[in-house]
Length: 393
Image (cartoon, rainbow, N blue to C red; front, side):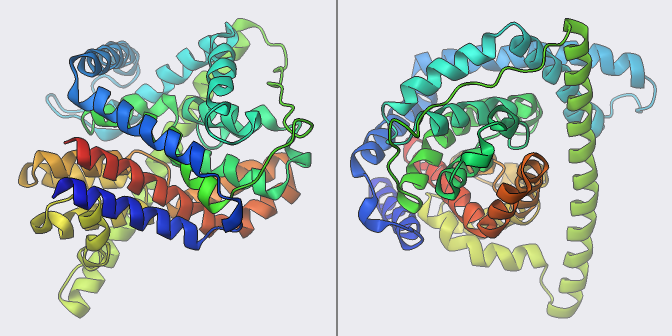
């Protein structure tokens, strides 16, 4: 039954992508099939083998130690603010982003990250049917996040055609930044965070190959990582620390706004219709939850979490999942957890548009025009990752 449901999910997800395709005759099936097999193999390795368990435990332990180190700095600044035994979300989940952002800056300064991005991107370009630019950008998106990644292509941005820009933006919205992986791991199981990160990287290329297929000539495929303005070590460190703090503050502000708005809308909706707005959306998203493998008796609750992520952001949805996780099966928690690990939500349209517009206004306007289609594609990436997780659990 699981296999039949999985095959049905693949058909539906690919059909939804095919319907939105701007060049159906240009779809390249070979790289799509190769990447789908890679997704299945990597998901099996990460979720069902001792080797995968070893890798995930290693990464999880690394972030556990990093979060503990971050806690020392947080306690030094904010110690005594929280009541003993309490765990304020801002301090325990968001503030560690500052420390992890600093580590990313150090890795970037020592040229470790450019090395990883270049060679991993080069390998991916051999199998994904896309250009080197798209491949490098996909890897960079998983490290820097949906805003910062465009800085690495700012010199080429004016000459990037709209169809390639869509693929770059799809990668940015489908992945998450390394600086907030630790935050996610405090809210959902680390193995699902890592699995989603890997699956979404390939999933972004798969969906882009269907919705937005094109060929890239050798002449068009010249890409060089932009050299950053030379800074001293401590200038760089200060910049990345401040960037991490800005991210934490922005996420915190968005959470305050979204949680308050959802609470108000739920109250008004319930007073008028006798059912909360989120539950109503849960019924709308229930069929999607079912096709990705959620048991029939849990599709409404799962659909509610999925809708919350789309309308607000993944942090709000992860908090809601944490509240009801004990009442759901472990299979459902795993599937929905993987679905949540991406930036695919309405607010990300504005974030990506703003990031590109700050670098090139004309290209930012192009992103704004295909914003909804971008969100559509990125959501299909999340559904694909969740469906693959469902067949493995």
